[in-house]
Image (cartoon, one colour):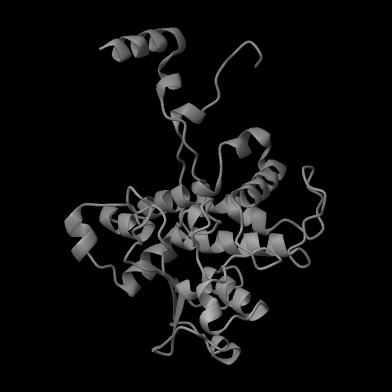
Amino acid sequence: AVVAGLMRNYFNAYGAKKLGARRREPMKREMWVRIESIPENTHLPQRRQPWSPQSNQRDRTMLRMGRVLWRTGHRVGEVCDSPDGEVRYFTRASVTYRIAGVVVMDPTAEQLRLLRVGDVILLESPASKPDHFGVEPCPFPSVLPSSDDPLRAARAIVDIELESPCRGSARESRPLFADQFGRPLTYSAVNSWLHQVLAHLLGERAASALSWHSVRIGLACALRAVGCPPDVIQLICRWACEESLRLYARLDVNTNVEWTDKAQHATFDAYQVANLPELDHGD
């Protein structure tokens, strides 16, 4: 009762907007397309080095990572190094290929070049956040359909494999998305990269309302905009759900591809009250 009274006083003094949880806004697909379209050697004010996916390994890796997250809705925690040193990020062993109906877990360069439309890449989730303790991996893989489009998620993973080959037992520990030394990415590195790029494109204020989690939110919004059923969204984005759904509801490969294909072309407008601008004496 005391807390409720304090919140009511706070509400009366500052308004309902200040009581709302401040969460990231969804990133729209067109925002990511703008990132992909930044011309080579563009100067970004907050960076020392010019924008160059061709010569800058970090720019290249981040773009590939973003393409995969846009398709799968994975958390950034499934990409970055863990503070406790445990492997909770994607490794090369997280990737399984289905090429011409044959399942391949340790592909050669020749096999990777055989990927055609109709083949798929299955991306296994590491133990990250599907439960309260962060130790239970999601039982459903993400499905990335093969495509010749260089901006598609499957192509991004194949390019990583061809650019930095990794075979055998080394796949168990080699990060899928790594820095120039083959080490897992850090939160500070991926977050600063995205903020610098968004601030260049959208301005500092808009960039502050977006993060890598915005990509996950954007995929969920896009899936909903094209009429994807809530339980399918829940499975594609791997949110914890009721026990029966977790244990028995299986999402087949074709259904996953169908809905995430539609999401790539969805448009939507979604805002959160806490992120809307406020009137004050300064403004």
